[in-house]
Length: 200
Image (cartoon, rainbow, N blue to C red; front, top):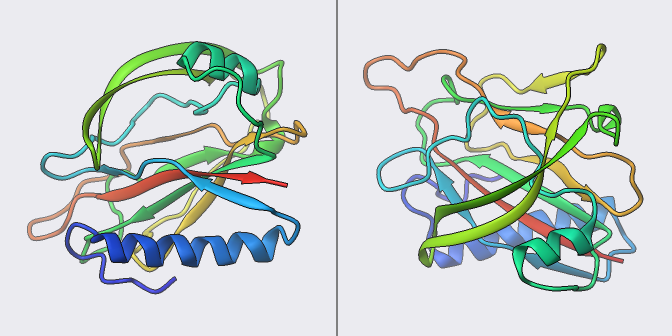
């Protein structure tokens, strides 16, 4: 993906270009999509940003949309067919060396390994520090689970992964892990992440 000049804090025009780029890719993957809805962009790493979400494998949504809405206080809403996470390194002169995003093969996710957990927390969004409630998932270990990460990701690359699938075809448990350390003059991981809902 083009860099879109993500070397400083992304400007609104850059974010709109980014969204357009991702939407074009998703429409290629899912030609029947009727509507997309974006949730807040979060920055991780660096000064005044959220830290990497390390060492806590999780899924952002429990795979019951109504239960998620009830717990979060948003009530019952139209259920998306899919919810994708969009994760991209930004504002880095070197690849991600210290805190890559790892994720589990979505084919290994299912009721037998999923554990609901209720989150009440604060995070930093473009609107400032906001409180949030969320019904999410942890994962039980099961022999044969497959986990992946992409080494040395750069600001020219973007990762799409599944948070929610109304058809129950699986989703990607994920988290950041400490892989290594950065040297003098190298950038620690900074990334931008968000979710996009697809309606069919």
